[in-house]
Image (tube, rainbow, N blue to C red; front, side, top):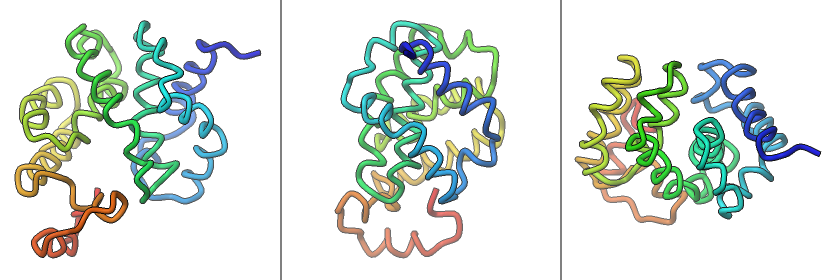
Length: 185
């Protein structure tokens, strides 16, 4: 029977070895379905807090961040569940920064996903405070995306593209923004 360490390793191997960066952010139904088939149960466990012990070890904690932040966005795309793990992922990401785990990570792609919950936060203080981390630990493309996320939060206080999924009423300005190219990330 697979233990927790094996499951965490499976998550990391899948994300960083079996997939390619172009798959991570593409809206691809087949890839979403693959994630659903392989990791739905584990993602549900993570959101339910059943894998919190993983946070005690850096590699397992990174796997937990993926299960809480990235995987739900693809498994439950365009639904409220896509954001269900955000608070836990944000806390883990902030903890990883404070403990020096991000700085100690030699691989840029892994540092990027340690920090991704900060980019996804609907909190301007988090966005502004943590943007320098993207500059320090990721590449220019990721910094550009993080800056655009911060700009949206500065303008609207939330991500308008989440409104429908979360049952929020969009303002006229948000609806106009959503019509512009690149507004849905």
